Image (cartoon, rainbow over all chains, first blue to last red; front, side, top):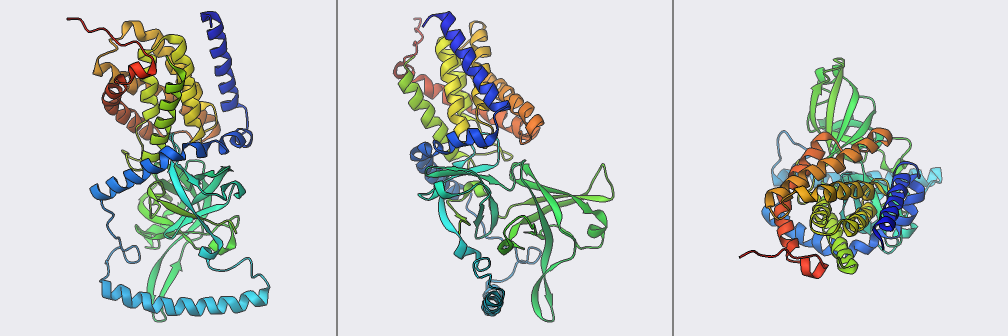
Length: 285
Length: 163
């Protein structure tokens, strides 16, 4: 190919890339790449497995008591509390079953785990966004917006799905938005209960594994209703009802906003780094 | 340049980038291995081959990211164009050149992502871009040294040793 033709060909490719990047909507370009991204699994999966093993050896994950971050509990106390909670949970599930039958909404409520299918994580975003690629035989049936979770909390939603693989937009991605409530477990005369004292607020992904809430009034912080290590739980009517108050993350820092002194600047971190998980659950039922 | 070995190299590096992401990181950002290969090809292959190969590498990276399709292809194409033009004034064999070009290249590609992000949202933060550039710059001399061993396989001219 002559230099002139080669230059013309490259210019045409660049123009096409510019058009696709700036003018073609996501839903059109996603159709192509959703069906091609699984091709990288033979390299990404073994690499990920090895990297996870090495990472675990170098920096082993230390257990953290998110239930009582200020005073980490003794194992005996945790066993006792777990036993109690199981009894209560069984009771609550029983009551729920009863009311579900009454409401004839059997398919809409239930244990979240029963509504999910496991998918392997292929890798993190190859660029600078907060997303992960997952692989599984039923990936092509997933729809954009399907919720992705781990036992520790909600991770994100399906961005695009194709043959054998799907891309998950994490909650920490800069284009992610949802409403959530912030609360904590408190001891009361009736036992341990989860208490939310402030109204649900908008949470925005901030990238680099973080989320921000900037609409919470500072008076709640002054009243002690919001502090570090509180739980952030989903409270968004646009999401499936079964996920109400499902954990999203924990409050990593709270400080007064510099530009709007009546509001707090709250940073929320997911409980687990989704980019390091080997498996996730997709709520596809 | 032989196209098939370069495509295989690109495939392996994009797979590695996805597999290592989340484990090798600084301040939430990972080094951009694909960008380092783009720098290597721009420095050591002929202009026309480098432009096409870097564009293809960007396109491969676009497949595994949440960014819009074509953004990395555009960024790497422009980067290859700039590096090929500057190739004659660069001391290509020196590790400092590799580190500096990877650093500048990473900032350049992040700038394109930021411009896109400013319009459509979802671009990287300045902190993430800086961390990625720093990591890529630090890793570039090592990775390019390894890649130089593959120059005969990739069909790139091997520099003569003067004795």
